[in-house]
Image (cartoon, rainbow, N blue to C red; front, side, top):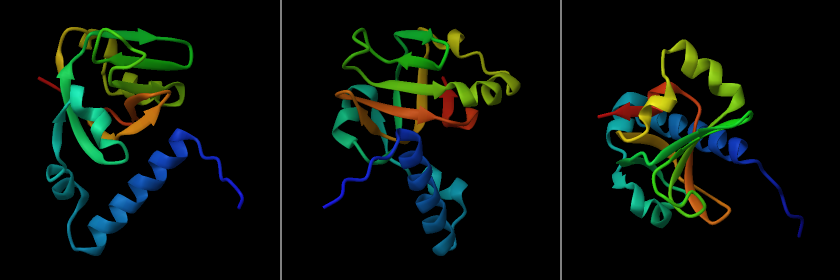
Length: 134
């Protein structure tokens, strides 16, 4: 049996396309369908791997590297829930006036598919609309 390798981004795109197709098939627009997505606390995100969810929590730290921005929802970034923005999406957040660094200490709700990466739960953010600040 051959093993198929996929990047996290490819999995996210595939899931999003399936979500849109499902929403369209049943006569609902994606905005309505998004309202029906379950909301969970960041500390419980690891229990929902593979699910579309809205994850709510206080941002402990934000780190920007050359290739990604990491929004950490706990002290230990190796184990706690993280939202990730990759370099190819920086311009979308910048042009929308979203300064992710300012989210440190604030409560956020991030939406997307919860993935498991190196033992921790994360959501990959590709659009500014995936973040809501309280």
